[in-house]
Every structure is written in structure tokens, then in C-alpha cells.
Length: 459
Image (cartoon, rainbow, N blue to C red; front, side, top):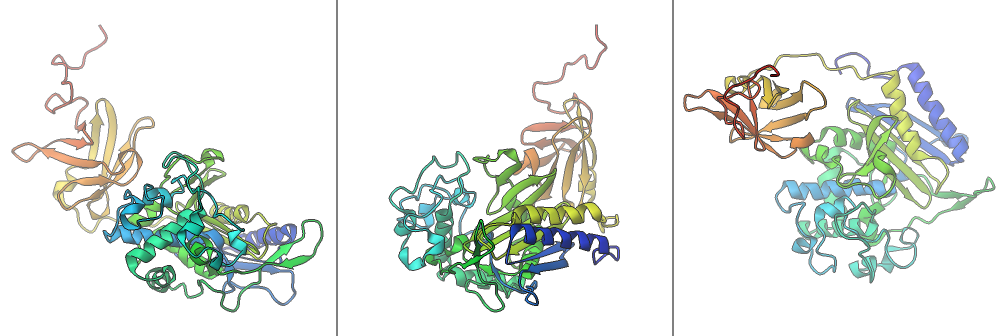
């Protein structure tokens, strides 16, 4: 940060601790641990326990359930970035013989492949993986319930298929690939497939009495990529920093940002919820969050990130049900963002500016509608509407002198500066739209032409 606010203010820290204390007490959780990350590092941790003197720390492992899916999605996007697959590829292209090979990799990542939510047979989260030795045992006789690509229908078997895809293309186990490609580069030494001390035990709390029942901790076998991992609040804080900023050793920033682009409309819950590529999306009190929830018998987990504020909140508890862990994690983010708003980086001039790109900066018009094109770092451009709710997008410079849209309406579209024979910029071509320096410039090739009599008062 540019200002010396590395630690939270005492009042903020107390509000965070109060929130988790209420959650642990009212939710009757045997223990609960939480952390907040901001501006690239962990700034707060807190914990509560029902056993005096045995309070967990940010280094205590809990099972994180479906938060595992985010790690699996990172592995798949690495394969895409290396050119080993395309997200639009049919699964059959790389993993033949599954019986559901017509679905695409993107559909599996976004839970829009139409597959069943659970594996057939006994409750897979509470039984050993040996009961499901092959993909047919995971998928069952009727694995497809909905047309692919039409809606969001959460599917744990879908992430089993993605884990098997990773194994096929890497030639090693999902666990080995995860450790080598993600966990070790990011320093997540306390994120493992099997529990390593110190770790919490999983419990069920009786709904009508203050008594406990131990929950089994099974090896999930092929279902592992959907929910097997154990982790800590400290490791999840470091993982949240990666999901916000990227890391060239694992995934570049553009790829982690792509993960949180909504993929399909949600099947239920309204437009306040959604799903990207391996991450859940949530709007809470007007705040855009991404991350994931997780649960396995005996454990609850949630990680939410507010990218705009660069704040992440994570909560882990060792109970099958009780505390509203997703709401608590969202509240931790809100407490920090509201009490201590992000301090922006100081403005600094660009170290260099290409004159040919600088020439493009300034006002442009799509017909009569005014826009501004601003030059950013690395020859990047940002198009901003100057009136009303027009379309805004950022653009990445390409080696051939064009720019590619990174978000908004022009995501993936190409922006070109069209020049006259003498080198002067005639107009901008953005996905066939012509932007001119003057409203309906008659000297530019405006589609449909410009009335030769020009602008005039109302007759």
C-alpha cells in the first residue's frame, strides 16, 4: 500500500471478532476460525472454540469441501493457457468414452453441462471412494438431466470429470498436478488431500440438544476434485490474493479475472447469484463478491472476495450445519470495506507513451454519442461513455497493432485504428462500429453515409 495502514484499526478488529463470536455462539459450532486479506496480505485472523484453551489458529486445517472446485478450475485453465485444450472443446475430444462427451469443458466448469448434481448410490461425501472405482460409478445410468448450456445446475460429478481430464492430459494424478502446479508455487503448504496436524475434527451438532456426534472423514476417490481438500485460514488468505491478482507461475491476471465472468443465468436464486468458471458469484448489499462455499459432513467453509476493494474474508467451522458461514464471510468483507475504505494508489504518469497510440486518446463519437478513449499502461486503452449509460470496455494491445476487448459489451471484440494513405487516423473500427472524431464525420466511412446537407435546425 502507499499509506502505512498495514494493520486494521482496533475498532475494525473488534467488529470482526464480534461477528465471528456471535456466529460461533448462535450457530453452536465446536470451533470457528476466520481471516481477512487486504492489499495482498493477511491483515486479521480470529477464532472461537467451545473448548477452553484449545482455540484454533490460522494454521489449523479444516475440510473445505467444494472450495476444492476452485483449485480444479485453476488446473483446467492452466491447460487452456498452455494450448492443450480450448474451453469450447467437447469433453470427448480429450477424455473419450465417458458417455457424456458432448458437453464442453466450459460447461463443466460453469455447472451448465446439464449433469446430475450427485453421484448415484450411497451418499458419496460420507462413504469411501472405493465404492465408486470408475467414472461409470460416478455418473450412473442417467447422468444428464438438462440440455447442455441452457441453465446452471450444480454438478459434483462434473468436477470429477474435470479432475479425470487433468489426469489424462498431465499423465499424473490430480493430486500430484495440484501440488506441483498450484500449491507449491503459491506456498500453500497446509492445503492437502489428507489431514495433517494440527487439524480440526468434524462434528455434527444435535439440532435440539447441545450434544455432538463425530462425522467420518472419508477419502473421496474419484470425487476428490469436487471436494476433498483440507486447508487453513492462512492458506486460503494467500489463495484469495492469487485469485484477485493472478500469479504468472500459476495463472496470469487475465485468466483469474476470466474465472469471475458470469457464464449462464442461475437456475434459482435470482440475479444476485451466479457462477463463472469454477467460482460462485454473489451480490450482497450492493457489493460484488466472488469465491466459493464448501461443506462436507463435519465442516463448513466459505471464501468471498471483493475485487474492487481488494478485500477477502474466509470462515471455517467444524460442524455439519449451524452457523451461516457464507453470510459471516460476506460480513467480514463488508466490515473492513465500510470501516476502512481502500486507499487508492497515487496517480503516476506513464513511464513512456507511444505517439501512435497517444494520438488515439481523447473524444470519439459513435454516431452522435460521445465517448472518450484513454491510454493506460502497456499501450492498453479504455473506452468510456460520456453521456448516459453507454458501453464501457477495457482493451489489451496486440502485437499486430490492434486491441482486444477485455470486458463489457466489447469483450473479445477487436478495435482497429484505420489510417488514411498519408498516415492520419481516419476512424476507429470496433466490431464493425465506426467511431469518428466528429459526430457523423462526413469524411469517414460511416455506414449508410451522412446527409450531404449536414446538421441543421428543425425546419
